Structures are given as C-alpha cells and as structure tokens.
Image (cartoon, rainbow, N blue to C red; front, side, top):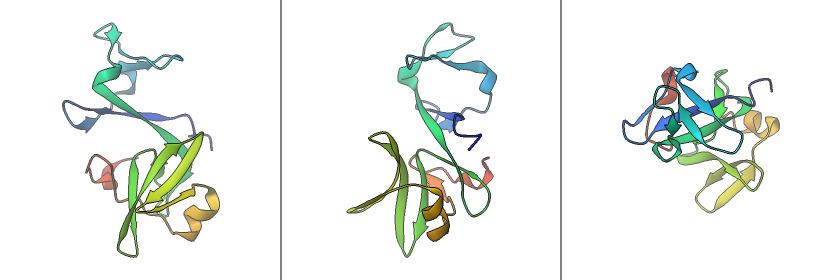
Length: 119
C-alpha cells in the first residue's frame, strides 16, 4: 500500500495524462498548480488517486480505471470515503480480496484511453 498516495492528472483540454510529475503541485486544500504557470489549474485537470492495489498484471489501480468481466465493464471510483467497483446497477467496496476474486486486469479508464502502457 506504499503507492496509496500516488496521483495522476488527466488534462481535460489535451486529453492525455501528464507524465511530468515535477510540473504539478497538489495543495492540501485541493488546488492543483502548474509550476510554470504559477496559478490554480484545478478546472483544467482531473486528479485521480491510486488505490494502493495492483491488478492481476501487477499494474497499479487508479480511480477512473476500468476492467471487463463476463461481458460487462466495471469502473473503479472514489465514493463516500473509499474506492468501489461499480457497474450497471451494481457496486461493491474495492479491497485486496475482490481484486483477486474478480481477477481484475485494468483495460482502460473513464476517458476511453487504453491503460496497457501505463504504470
């Protein structure tokens, strides 16, 4: 769980994940600042937190990731103080046990990007 407090940032305008962690600063009160712009950029990005868990391929699982099981697509989401697995008319708390039970292999994310090359 040492990766629990890792984050990634999705650029709404450019539609890609930032890869340069040094260029962004997340303040404790929730503002996201780009160091070269010296201003709050929170409205331009979506911050996604790591769950601290890994999928069946050893990749870190983040808020916003998706996986498929039995022909259905499921999302990983932050909800009411914890991470959940959600699908059509379904949700369950995400934990180490159900990552193994569902044999979760992240296939993408809510932005429609293939996560095969990430982490």
